[in-house]
Image 1 (cartoon, rainbow, N blue to C red):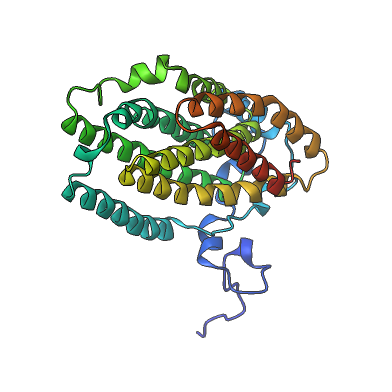
Image 2 (image 1 turned 90 degrees about the horizontal axis):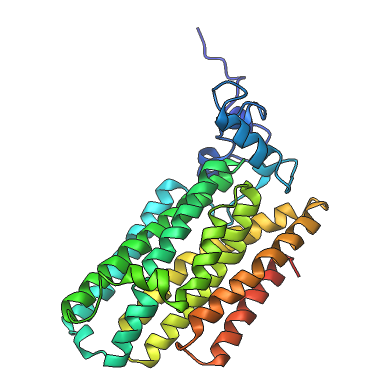
Length: 325
C-alpha cells in the first residue's frame, strides 16, 4: 500500500505558517497544558487551591491580552542554543578568573577597595537569589510557554551568577582571612543601608502574585535597576585597578542584555491592548520610587553623583524604549 502524501507535514498548531517552522517555534510555541481550560488550569478539582490561584492571578490579571502566545523571544533561544551559548560564556569567565589568579590579582588590591568589596560585591549573591526566585515564579505562572521559556533562562542566568559571586567570595576570603568574606554577607544584606532599598524592592516583588504585575516589577523595574548597580560596581572596580571584578560585571551585564530585549518585546505586546496602557502606567508609578530608592542607597559611597544620575537616565531610557513614557 502506498503512503498517503496528503497529510500534515508539520505540527498542526504551526500548519498555518507559510514557511517551515523553526526549531524555536517547534520547541517553545503553545506548550502549556494549563491553557486548555482557563477555569481548571491544573488537573485537579476546579475548586482546588492551585486552580483558584491560577484563575485569580493569571486569568483575572489586571493586564489582559487576547493572545499571549503571540509573544516571541527576539533572540529565539531554545534549551539547546542556550546551553551552547552559555557553555562558551562560562569558559570565557573561567579563563578570566584563571588568568587573574595566575597574576595574583587579589593580593594587589587596595585595602580600602577590599573593604568596599565586602559591602558592595560579595553580598550581591543575596540580591541575585531574589531575582532567581522571582523569575521562577514567572516560569510557574506565565500563560504563554514562549514567555515561560525566557523566564526560565533568566532564572538560570541569575543562579549562575549566584554561584560565580559565591566562588569569588571564597577566593577573597583565602587572600584576606581577616575580613568577613563568606561569613559576613548576610549581615551586610540585612543591616547595611547600602542594601535596604533593594531588600524592600525585592521582598515586595516576591509577594506580588498577579503574574503580569510580578513580571513587570521583576523585569521592567527590578532587573533594570540591578543592571545599573552592577554597571556602577564595574566602573568603580576599574577605577580601583580591580580588573577582575570589572570584567565579571561586564560578563554579567551581557546576560542581562537578553533580559532587556525580551522584556521590551513583552511590554510592546501588552501595549497592543489599549486598556493595558493605564495599568502599566499605574504599576510604573507604584514601583519606580522603590527602584530609585534602591539605586540611591547602593550608589552612596561607591561613585559620585554623576554616576547616580547616569544610572537614572539609563533606566528612564529603558522606559522610553518600552513605550512607557
